[in-house]
Image (cartoon, rainbow, N blue to C red; front, side, top):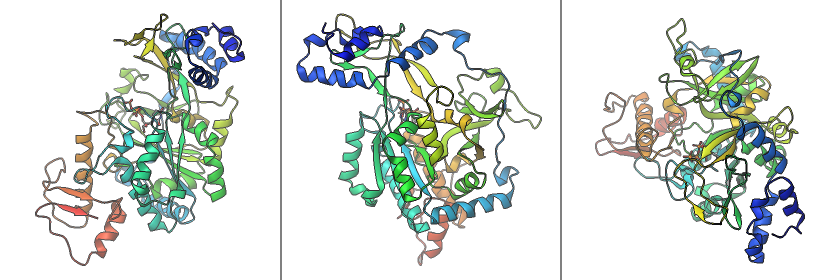
Length: 477
Ligand code: UTP
């Protein structure tokens, strides 16, 4: 094998010579491609992860639970929250929006394996009647919010190497759904190599390393590297509203949340929903030695997940639904930290990774054959000043499309959207028949331009000169 290239020599010294095992067989452009991929890899980081995550198993690799307690949070008014404080927060958030201090941020770099949809997940048709795609729903919500507050919003969209070109093409094809093209910003997240259980970097083909997105936590570095933070600074934006590409129900721009975040001087704030039942697979907001942390459902012992407090509620009930507000300079600090003290930790995920073996033959693993490394955005919370958790109503913020069928599927999401539209109508005094779960009998869809939350819906409804009939279904645009 050629070792003339300094990068190849570096990989050899790091015990990763197998990456270039087939180098001499490759055509010159394929050699360049492999070298470029290899140059993305931080070998010292891989070595550290091999020692700390791959070699460690059992208790040594487990999460530290000492001093863990449930995290405090601001409850909704309906659950005992301070109505005046919520009103003050909403006003402060609206002021910030009118001042143009907020931008939206969608993380869309995931692989969407569970949904099994061919294409970027944001291009998945999701609304119940018109079949609008996830990206269109967000675009329309952001356009409507921008109009409402008199300041068009910037929208940052994080893609992956795999779906970047297709995502941009989709937006172009749809004329950016009416958004100002100079305010929609796409950037790619970083990648990490997968390793086998002995820490050797895997090849997916002779000229290509098994690389995959570095997790949604990679967004902090990618926001910095892409110039998004500088752009925010130039535009006077200090707050980023973070949401996932698979959740069309989200209040992408929520004045009360923004207000709580700003009034508390928080660098990172999150929304929680009370867990529906102990075994529900949500991360838990917890306090640990004076810091706010999220402990994943797989890391919190089931006995603790089932603990009940004096009021008969789950003690660890604050479930994370991946909705955050982030301060711009906090992101910069996290992205540029030297990694020794302030840094997001990588998590280990054992996966079936399509790869080639030592003879260059493709292996299609039937069980996990290696490890992927991922960063999680909520791991930034312990480093934030004045971090804050507020409660939200699940029905108005969270119905993700994760699986092709069953829970968190397109069907459950469409039904949750219809329930939301029905609630908005019923709040206006329309007697809409629903079943016991709130699902309306008729076809129903509300375009975000008409209403993207209860307040904006109420305003549009009040402006209607003729009230629509409901007999055959209703589409409000
Ligand atoms: P998920 O954890 O649901 O992962 O991502 P996923 O890749 O979309 O789906 P599966 O697990 O393969 O079925 C939650 C959110 O984080 C984004 C996803 O696009 C989604 O919005 N994400 C995830 C990234 O942007 N980058 C990543 O590396 C991982």
